[in-house]
Length: 500
Image 1 (cartoon, rainbow, N blue to C red):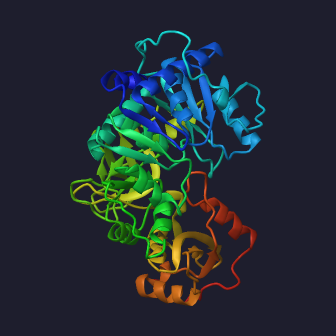
Image 2: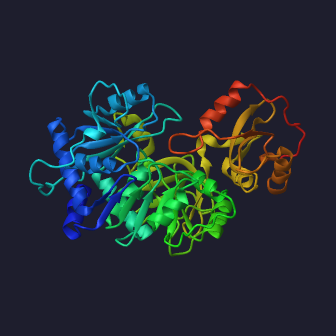
Image 3: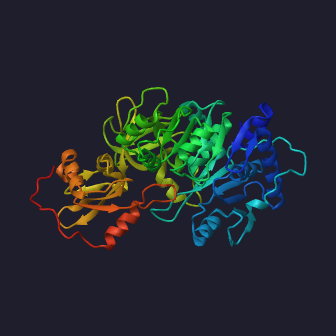
């Protein structure tokens, strides 16, 4: 089934069944089809047709989902735009995507070189009879997802309908999502995780979706108790914040089968602490926009291995490669490469960059990991994040996990800074856990007990909040820039210090 026909299929099977809700309203399956048809008419009247691009600069709301299906109904492509971008950043994305139309919030004073539609003006009632979607091409471009741009100018990841359909089927098999499920969406809809895991997967499998406008830690579990979701997807930061809520908070989470933890690595300690407290498992997975969201996942019902990001989704392959591109044995660290029908078509207008990351059908992720004998993947970091101290390779995640296990630390980020003796040394940035104060001497003692000497941070910086990108990942380039602007460390380690 082409994903553009999901509203038609749901309305035919169960017209009065619940499809979508947000803070303002609820749509049945018949309502969803009705509004998608009306929006498609409106877009067509504004000149949108096959292969055109519609940019959606919207917060999490029902209209985003309606417009997604409406654009696809016309054979058009959607590029989600982060509402937090500056006017110049929006213009760059809209221009790069060659969008025909930009849809914005009613109070957004957007100025663009293309047509702008305020979402409140979107047509909600079709003027003509609703007809089933015509046959659509699976090779047609469905989404243009722009990378966060923390390492350079954002690139448009081209995902076609075949990519999305494959990922939805992989998610259905890997997570066991079906008609009895209800997904709570808390991640932003401008991110592929929010679109695929929290909207397309449930709607295409007969489940329903509750759209939260944004994550609010004080009221999150009130929403869980009211809406009774069976699953949701979030990033480690959200789980760390929830795990740090006052100990006397004991919400009713009995409806939740599992929650997906992705977008950034999480510590094993956080996963175990969260599950012990709230009574449902965090299923850690791994993926990236270039692979339509997910590549590995810990089994929901099978053996989970905490500290790993699980097994490949059904239909995907994962390999670990050395610097020459050769596959390495189990237990050996190297670059993670993935292959499957979910791998992107490429980067929009960037064939050279596409050729660098997709080689013989394998997507070279730039992440460093290792597979165990049973095929479970463990991530150790990004290749660009690796620290080389005195010839020793250090992967920040190991140190970050140690720091995050300390009760005074909500999250940690570790970077390498230049050192005249060792080449690089380890520097840690920590975010204070609510209700705690960080004592760096105690952190040093904690690291001394858990880490070899060469892996221990030589400096700790305590922050109220770590810098993050729009998806919630810690923005290490910001930390590196901060470290560079403050100059070299005042003291260097003694070169006679024992390595290890």
